[in-house]
Image 1 (cartoon, rainbow, N blue to C red):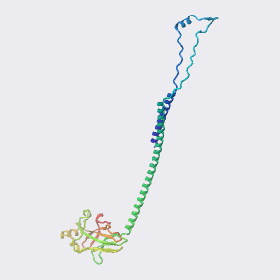
Image 2 (tube, rainbow, N blue to C red; image 1 turned 45 degrees about the vertical axis):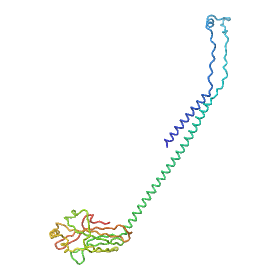
Image 3 (cartoon, rainbow, N blue to C red; image 1 turned 90 degrees about the horizontal axis):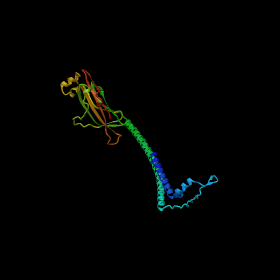
Image 4 (tube, one colour; image 1 turned 90 degrees about the vertical axis):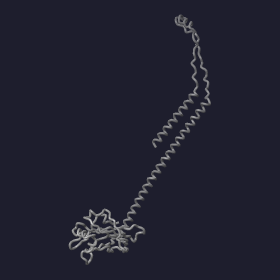
Length: 306
């Protein structure tokens, strides 16, 4: 805005100088011409010479010049008329100066109004942006709070390996609902892997349904209820190994036998079409000489919850 004020002040000064020049030209045009200075008639050279040679003496005192003095009375000043074209020019310049000054004042007022409106719009925009950000933050906080409530109330299926009751060296893979709402287990897959240790397991675990005519029956688990997904006995290890050499390598711990799987389940109180949750699990079967054990094992990707 200081730049605009400076330009307006510069234009005002220019108009003022122009107005002063116009006024001065009009005054000079209206001023009367200078009268010529009266010129005395020339004195003849002979007369000057005679006066310089001999001057009459009046009782020892030089007499005054006998030449009569001529007093020239200047004529009365004649008023000079101001031509019409000078008057029209002066009036036009005066009108232009007035119009220019009025235009500058109007432009300055308009620019100030624009500046005030721009400041008001910027303030309104900043206020609206702040309100929008506050509303977005509030909505995000409400969404996180609602998501936290849903996560707290949703079912959580955990898969554990537990010894079978009454049967030595036998184990059961059990799914338990540790959440606060019912869950429906829609599918369960498991797979047997052989590796020297956990570091040699495949990075991505791809589980496929078993080739069997039996179709998985969905299981509904209330909070705190459990269901057995798979059981394994010591006598079943040979059937899991591909050959006798593989079984011997498992007995001598040259290779390890891993049982891996996943469980997919739905939340009964969730809206229809929501993506199912998933729980992955992995266990290492330790085949001893007399007894066996089944303990959790595997990397993080083999033991995850969604």
